[in-house]
Length: 235
Image (spheres, rainbow, N blue to C red):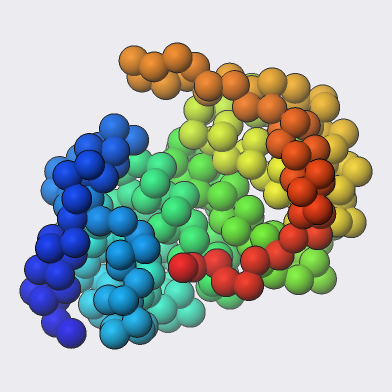
């Protein structure tokens, strides 16, 4: 399926209600407003097509960029490719749910995520921490260094309250994910959540949201989710 056809298909799937919601979350034109579930039949036809994914991502169209992540070949992407995608990720739904998700299926995921976390740039930091969340929720515990994750939890405890807002959210989610999906450090993550306490996320023209990792962890435990691993990262 060629680029023009895919763009026409995506535009036809757009809904005004979803477009308004995406824009409300930070997307800007061009955007069609396509539900992620509505993309699945199109993705099944195309499967993996990295050249097409690159064309779609380069449009700046939110829906096309999201769909690019679904059909991308992460193992064919190099560090500079992920950096370029991050350069185009202008708000968190792209950085955390497209770029970070795609990176999580690459062999270089941890190395790139580490670099982004250390960058000091809000969306790169957010994507780096989010990538670890996707990784921890999918890969075997043996693929991670417990000492490295312990250090990352300590870093979160010391720096989360002074971090940029999107990074705060991703760091808070990292605590949750370690506690539930990386059982060897469950107790450490629970202790970190208690030490961090409530995390305030300021939002433009809206009331601040308050994140409570301890409460979220307990809810997941009550639901029997301790040790949870998802079968796939991408939809």
